[in-house]
Length: 286
Image 1 (tube, rainbow, N blue to C red):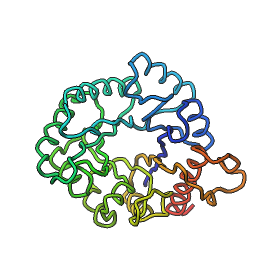
Image 2: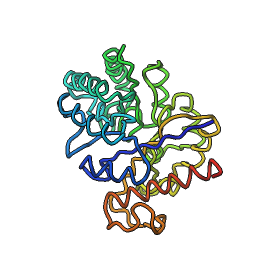
Image 3: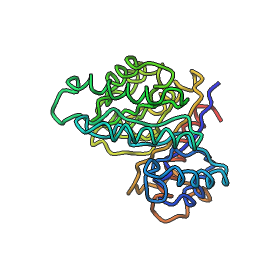
Image 4: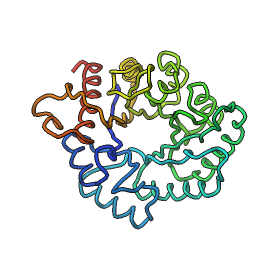
């Protein structure tokens, strides 16, 4: 039996942690994939500052589903050593936060060049991450992202098979594959299904790559979530709405969270939550 746990990039609601938690509480979501908090990336805080953030989360009953780090989101030609030090710092943050997952990337490729030219360096850098993380119990999650080595399902599979292990797994991000003009279903999903332990919820359209609420784009969100449900997936569905400026609020019903709010992060977030909850309810026959 599947178990979908909802989480969110709460910095898309507001930069303020209290506001993030207030809004998430309204939606019944108690997990955060923490990227930015109080105007700064989590990975840029000192460990003492991180402990204070953890205290605030604990007081409200919130936990992190993952650290939404920017690790691996530099050019493959950039100096790696400072980045490796940032990774080691992030491991310490994960320990304080009692967080199992760190979201990461596989480096931006030079525009116009064949990514295969940089494969060996990508693998080398990721092996350095994995070695540094040995014994921590933290799982490093690779997110498919436009412009990095692992932007297509095929290159994601290359990484996941080459670096295969208990502490290196995959995130499936619907919108990011669409924005690379990859076919999510059945192609991408069937390639990656055995490596997926975490899912990012956002959707997009092929025509101009703009992001839309889950199920309203070309990302095959419904089909893939059905597959995961039928396979007994137990893990996070992490909302990363990217709906800044979105103005269709027809999914919101009177008296629902966000319905009476002015346009902004919290209202756009409410649309994203409602779209996902509608899909999950239909899949589970509720």
